[in-house]
Image (cartoon, rainbow, N blue to C red; front, side, top):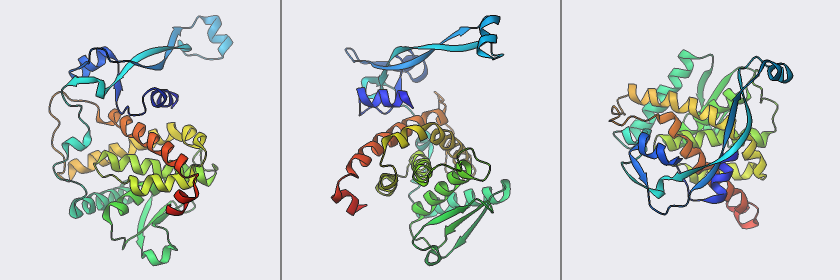
Length: 287
């Protein structure tokens, strides 16, 4: 999370970063001549002596003893083969009605059949203006079944699933303030939708801006957002393959789940801008 802050401070337009050699070996790209590096913090790890283990009250053989700043470069500062993400393997635009509905139904069925969650649908009119909700006491997700926007319906399911993972009765974060919880859940939904190629920023960023007035809320929630985002992306990736919406990746094969960090960085930048704009009366009226 701190490195995302460092990257944003040095290059607000950055989306994907890697080291000089990593661009070459992992992505078949080269850093452009004269490109100015971005510095990020990397841990310094050392082997502990028995005395140090006792002093630190740990059995770990190694520990972080400090940090150093290493240079990385944004993808825009490099040239070469395209950097692939999950959306590059989707055969058809998932904004299409049939495909989004298929993914929504597959995700809902998975949660009902393979987890201890229960997902049901009710008319939107019974939700008092909400699109859905998660009920911790019954471990139930309820979605407005007659929502006409299929992308928004899928995003709502992602949002409520994030609540179930982060704010259930047994969750370590169940007692966080509502602003914190809503920031987390919607950020997860936004990143998950971005991963399948559907941009919900018009809704998601405005939604988060109404809750996350303090940038520190976003900052402290980032690591938890990333953990759940990776889980949702992994599930969605498997379901889109089962539905025949993905092709097999071509060489070079990259870790698609790790590449989701670019969307997290983009979402964080957008959230920062939206939170700043939300302080103006005109922007509050629009939200």
